[in-house]
Image (cartoon, rainbow over all chains, first blue to last red; front, side, top):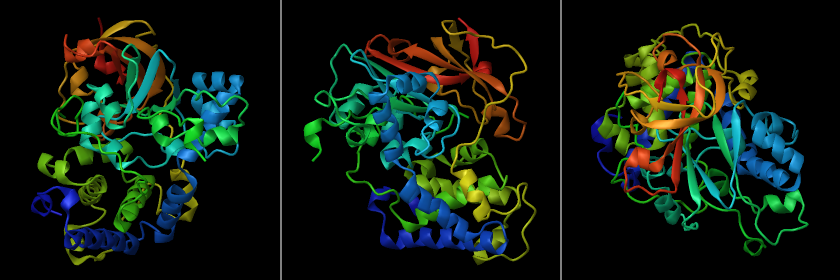
Length: 211
Length: 219
């Protein structure tokens, strides 16, 4: 995959080039397998976990619990890794997860300007836009402009706090609970918690937005 | 390094384009690249900071046009070549031409899958007291190491406030180049938007970075 293979926008990539990448990847996997470094079935298991088990539903459960359980919310904001670890049904979480709470005064937004750091165990694999240049370049300089790209407009006096994930700490935004959800249980509330609301590029859905 | 990867604050990349109902992977080979990279990392072939450094060293024109998993693939293949775990003639042949070499943690098997699905621990016991406390004013150093660093360009030379002390962690700057874990205190440092982007910046924005102690001086 030399430079001349990719001298145009990848969105216009030709099918023949994609298959060339596919062939190169397959060849490398063959080499690693033949050398005895990897078991391809173990790779399948990693992929299956990220496609079926580990995803934003994990984070949504955490948020819904925090909305309904003040003691859990307090513990979450103090030490998110430890607090999430007490929820047996959520996937195992590594250390140094930090939960940050949105309020009417402060909106939090998470980025990794240097690469793609993201709370995989809470949200799964990051979307393409999170890893791409437009978001990584602008989130720290023009977060309101970025929010506008997502159709989100916040009051002019709301402080926008951007967290650049430049180390191994990982950030989970605790969005504000939507009005009109009084008396809702955690399972129903979790349906309002979008992936983007936990990155900070969105807000939780309003009750009318879900069936 | 002052590389193309350090994108914070650059202009001209256009608007963010969220993809409705985005699939987890767009191509089958992306699945294999993600899993292979994680698996080979778990064999001890490299650390996460070494993997990041390998992608940062892609020539800027390639970095900019490659898709995310193409960067992973190119970085991984280069690390395998650099460590002698595969050879260039094998890449050309598309198959192994000689036996594998020993791996620090052995081959990656089904027994290792659970291990890569949980984040590794990067904190280490502190050997020195933390130099800064929450509330301290600090200034990010104006440093330009030619190798891996996690201090973004936009923060260098700027003054901010320590908000949290995050403990003592593996230091990416040394571990990425094989100079050891060299654990350092880590701090969340918050900067006013105007400190970073000038008087015309939005006065309501604050930006924090996670800064290792060697990145900081008292301000």
